[in-house]
Figure 1 (spheres, rainbow, N blue to C red):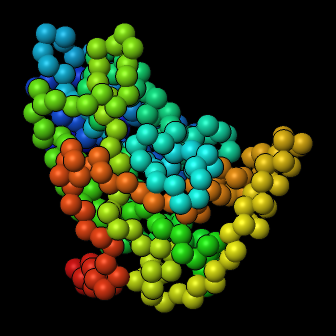
Figure 2: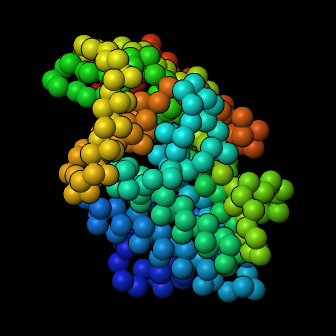
Length: 300
């Protein structure tokens, strides 16, 4: 085992030595919270170091396949109609300045691996993951705003795109274990480039709505809020930022339409590609067992 700060100077050189003979790399390193510069360091620069190391491997030997743990945050939710089906062909965010630092970093991370596939011939598989839940990690942003035990929930019945951590890990292992010569459809053409890019969404086949999720967690009182007026408030935030640009960063990200819809857009979620290519059989969100999983984790 080797511990290495991927964003540290010289990380790419160290990685190049470690990657010789490796058939697949699962890249899950990224910052979940923090300031812009922290995301740039731990997500963007770390990914640059990894792709630099992979690209520098001898051309005479097969290069490892790179599996990136991506995120549903990169999608352009404002551009989708209510109750549309989100799949891998949905467009990515067109206005990242109005989203949070995590979304911007994940968009840049994807751009880095796409560039590596196009320019250096890497085989890249981007696994865009919904909210990853499991013991100790049960509070998606889609639930709304919590004050004590009261949760103010825009919509109240909006589906939460999620997948259990064990199902996500199993899908990544299947993807990493596929033979290098197995046929893979071209999801994103790379004109003039020798690489390959595959995109697969990882989400449970039957996702719960906000009310079901909160009931499963227990201990909270849900106060549903009408979504339409809040959406117009977010649009007013965009207008105010356009008139007074200094407000753009001062306003909370949720007061921009693109960020608000990323949390509270009612959508359906396709699992067809993951089921077809990875034989993914993710468990549905089961309200009757979540509490038991949490209790078991706490007792260990």
